[in-house]
Image: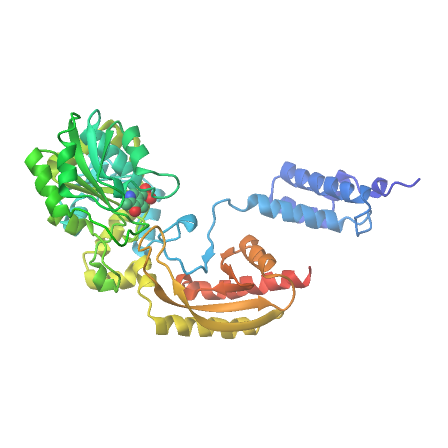
Length: 469
Ligand SMILES: *Cc1c(COP(=O)(O)O)cnc(C)c1O
């Protein structure tokens, strides 16, 4: 009766080991002790099942395991990943990466105090809403602008400010779910307005909107929602902004347009299909346009409300605006991003989202070939090929639009592709890639030139892990 567990070194003995001393130089003693205790506990369980492949008296496996635990614990939960999916606006991966200018401005705002709500000229209280106001006016032609947390919040505060206790007229073809369970009809009700749905899923005419005014419910606003993430084809009809604007002004109610993606340049200049822009929406008669900061605008998460000053004023003074206010770092990043749009000819190079979206097929093919050449040199790699593919913009925008894409297709020499993808996700520098038809696909569109080394390194490490089972 010699229980192997009795040969496990005690905690005091382990803490004196050279390996533990290295941990103690980096982590507080109680954390090192906890990690060693946990390592020993899992070893005890393995020993009880007769599944411990080491000499129980050997301290190094416990120290190795404790090291892994300490490293995992100290790793931030939210961390950078390499997006090798090719989906530019990947909501799960944080949507828009920011321009250098925006990152610098954000770090500066975070670093010290700022004039966030302080008027430096007057020496008294200022407004955080001032900072991006003029730039937003310039970019959209609006009279006034206000910034909240995201576009969903913008819509809630706008509806509450303009139509609480009254009705909002909206086409049945636009009662969409935007993603993450955000549904327009529920949102209108939560914002305190009655939903006055008109028309049918595929066809809504001007006379349908007109009839809503005769239904006995006082109308607070007409809302048009851009069907960002899906399209209706075939026997369809909808009412253009101009006609809705005329009706709205006849009836003395505001027209609100949820534009969604916030493209601040004409889509044709980027080779993209037509998409409403806030500037066009306002020029065509919308009283307010709302849109996201982190979709095609390419800035931080924010919800932008632009339009007529008397309407923006009502939004700004609504208590929900305070509840949904944006942080200084966001405002700094947004301002820096908007400044880029003052030099339209540089936008494509300086706003990462637009740069990635407009990379040419030739450039992407070259990038895929270069990546493939490097990957073929990795030990443990199987066949690697480069092939034409189809990319998507993502972020619930341009659902039909196919971007020309080139991808690297690879399989490991040994082990499964799913296991390889899992090791890539959980490595020191996580990589998110697509798995398709038994192969791993790496799309270079969303991999920055400064990330290629890390990507190749990560694949090398994941393949190395395959060799060890
Ligand atoms: C994406 C989208 C929203 C939500 O924007 P967030 O900034 O993610 O809150 C609202 N409306 C439309 C039409 C959208 O496309």
